[in-house]
Image (cartoon, one colour):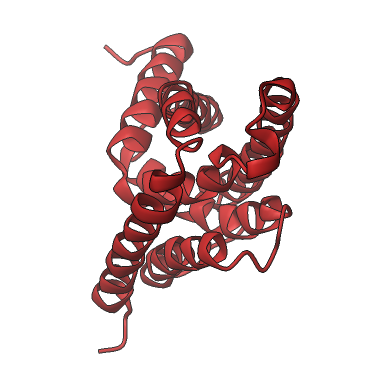
Length: 206
């Protein structure tokens, strides 16, 4: 039997969650976007400033995630509805590049506390990546708009699940100076290397 709209919606919510949780490139991009909002500075280590600092970090995180969500939702819809189309090989290459550039911005914060601009700009590209997956899944499926809504919601739920689990851990670690000075640079270097490998692997130059 052909599933009704509710069945299509719930199926694609599930598909959206799964795609986000197994999409290492999207996860790494989110990670490097979130890292700056989790690192404590010396002046907010005092107990009197910790609650104020946490509120500030949460507001910064909310701005970054809102920008990323809005951007990829726009291009996901435009691509899924065949309004805008880009070559998927180049989309995947730029997604890989976005990870390295975001990591570079953590090491040398060119944008300062305006990481949301990076999140929005590259979020537009990530939306085309999501749309490519959705396009493969919706072949022969009726109710494209319903599938699109469900898939987008699933992506957001997967993203939220990662943040709920990951942000408290990273925020706790971010108070440790050894973590900031040792682990974070090593992690950024590793992410940068992965990004470079993916760019070389994905670039349609042949």
